[in-house]
Image 1 (cartoon, rainbow, N blue to C red):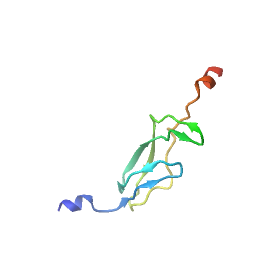
Image 2 (cartoon, rainbow, N blue to C red):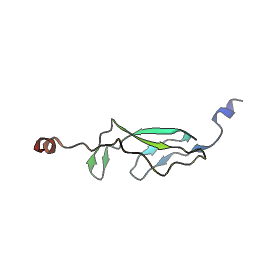
Image 3 (cartoon, one colour):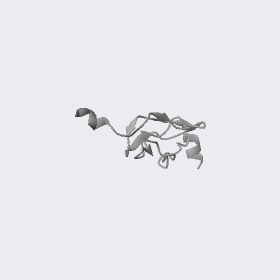
Amino acid sequence: SLASNVSGPQCNASVDLIGTCWPRSPAGQLVVRPCPAFFYGVRYNTTNNGYRECLANGSWAARVNYSECQEILNEEEWLRM
């Protein structure tokens, strides 16, 4: 039946500790979201992404991979370097 295509474990929509919203996702999927624009008053490059895995049992992985998210230096700071 058609319903069986969407059955099975899913991760519920969730917001992580830095405010990124992770949508409801099927188990076993690596979900991609843009890097946060601001964190602790620091601007980040939102053209890069963070990654979080929806595990096979339908729970989110505890760790979010934000390794691609990089600070944007102010132009003045950049010129002083």
